[in-house]
Length: 333
Ligand SMILES: *[C@@H]1O[C@H](CO)[C@@H](O)[C@H](O)[C@H]1NC(C)=O
Ligand SMILES: *[C@@H]1O[C@H](CO)[C@@H](O)[C@H](O)[C@H]1NC(C)=O
Ligand SMILES: *[C@@H]1O[C@H](CO)[C@@H](O)[C@H](O)[C@H]1NC(C)=O
Ligand SMILES: *[C@@H]1O[C@H](CO)[C@@H](O)[C@H](O)[C@H]1NC(C)=O
Image 1 (tube, rainbow, N blue to C red):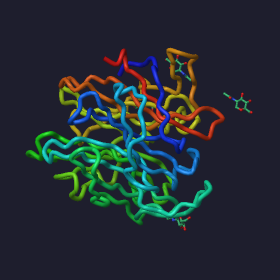
Image 2 (image 1 turned 120 degrees about the vertical axis):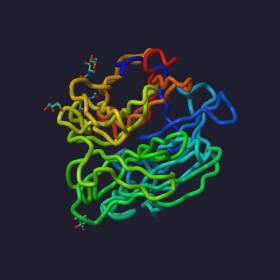
Image 3 (image 1 turned 30 degrees about the horizontal axis):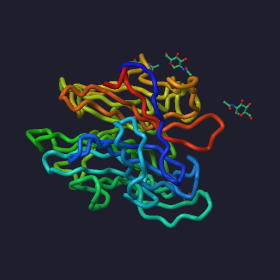
């Protein structure tokens, strides 16, 4: 992947101040010039440390291209809801929104609290992945959790960070219609965070983990983003949790993994860094962010899957706040 580049604009959404951490935008089915942003927004002016339980999922719109600015349009899921990822499912003719969380009463002022949204974690609600579907990105039907964690000693007892890839023509042969990369970690996320892949015959049916006893590669990572290129190879961007990355520990946060087939063998590219914490702005000095994570790529829709924009959630040094950043890859064309 091209290393980059230049940021024309940043996006800070909503009257609630805080945003991050995952989002995706799609050209509107009915209007070419309309772009949608699905983003986590932290209510009550709480900072990134309070993402759980204050995060909710909202939709925003841009009429000025993928780079924004975006304007708040709609609440999609109340707190606690986090980590939205949207894909178009051609076979079902529906948009599918993945997220984590469950409706939770939150204290008025920013406070951490113990709560659970399902097996695998009783400290916060991150374990368990839910699905919503919509014909138009606006009216959403909830289908509940499609993959859950477990109250046992497995490496991915805590199951979170959904990253969907849907094949356009439904299940065929050994290929399922729906692939879901996810991050697992032991109960209460008390150990290493690693990546695995699950699959399903359709978006709302139950998901089956591949390699249930082991992750797809050994390098600790979270926040996978998965895609298939136009040659049929598979790729992931991840937020690396190696010692030179992590949560403010080092700059080399963005890593790439690849495979010939969605079910492996996956290789973590430890030779090069996909993106680091430094961002160059066209209208100001470079910023070396404290944290940069939750990568997501916006591709060309000409069949070539050219990566055009990279979005990440960022946090500056000495700031409790975070926001979403959209950066052109190359010239973004
Ligand atoms: C998970 O966290 C809860 C709440 O702090 C604690 O009571 C429980 O013992 C922990 N369970 C495991 C398996 O770590
Ligand atoms: C990030 O990578 C760029 C390009 O290699 C480099 O110039 C910059 O120093 C790196 N930032 C950090 C904090 O290492
Ligand atoms: C990088 O990957 C290669 C091949 O998988 C492995 O042999 C090597 O130990 C890795 N190096 C580090 C620093 O993780
Ligand atoms: C962060 O805060 C420390 C302590 O106040 C200060 O020394 C440092 O310059 C600050 N860094 C930035 C980038 O603002």
